[in-house]
Image (cartoon, rainbow, N blue to C red; front, side, top):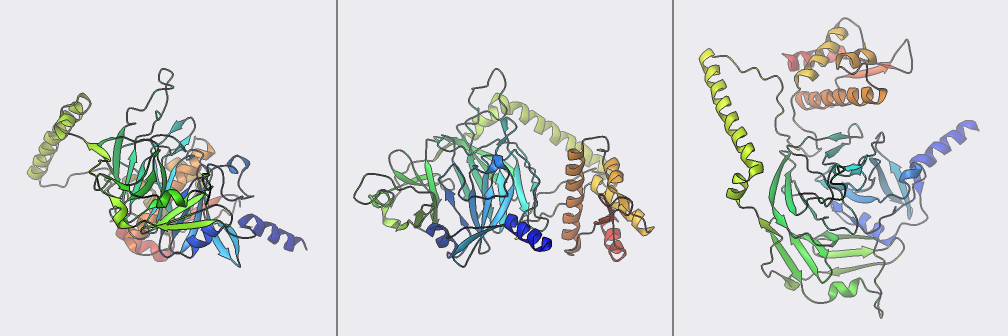
Length: 464
């Protein structure tokens, strides 16, 4: 009887069931292909009992990937599969995220089958971190970029423009209205990047400043075949940063869609998405509607989304003049080093090289192991060939966090072990992690790490 009660309790926390899914959610489930769904509600879409109290009323975001719906909770890092079965909604947690608390108001999106999260607010400032979800380890990982551009998606605020281009694997954003880290003198100041448009090439992790954008208040509904569908205070538009165009939509078709028939009241739209030029909208009950945006109603009047930067002005500006001379100095330094290398006919000893990130279908990069990761791998290998294991404390001391807090130790240890396993998977084409762990025989609360004997040859090949 106790066992039955325990199983029932665990299942209740892992799966949350509703009586009936909203009609718009059923439509998402029956739609082919990946989807990015827009939520128009600042509060939670679904009630999830196992969420901590401070997350219960937070906004939620929905993505459809590989035929499955996923519900993401900004601020917590949690991901739930939103499964519809027997005309009911089941929310099943799929991640193993430990609470982070700095991703409130973050932007969640997917490119191919990979889930990303960008920016967000927490600990009294906005951040510019790009995070990628690794389904193999069911955890989020930071993907470094060449610049740090803070961003937060704040409802009903100017400065919320964002665009996901899945074909070129790019993210477009406008600068956040607020300062990333407010100072006492600039506590209410406007971010100097506020009126700028940026593009992130996710493959190479490089940011480009495209120009100045007139980022007025807009409400976004979905991705059409020509761009992102939006409405400002006066009209419906399709915004396309790739062609740098604001396309206008003629007629009253869309206006009629979001008004209650025979009245001037707006429908209570909670969710929306587009499939091609078909727009679907609905509430959290049974109301759902759709409309086809006829291409003949889409008009290009030559309106620009942003004003392109003048390369000469950017080059000669005070802020970039210093960068220009630093780049020039580095070029001369590089030439000097290369000439010295040719004279000695020896290879240049680069301590740590991080090549450009290459996205594959599962989102895993092709980064090579850096020096620190190789040293730890070698240390565990040497112990394993002598039938010994490496304890958590030994790893903490080895990576230099032995005297830090438990939280810092855990985060640092997890990051380097996951990095080694992911890169070794890529290098060896073997999906089994190369670093394994077992419960410590001396303390069952702890783990010891080791490498199996049949993987010794893989390690030797990687470290040679």
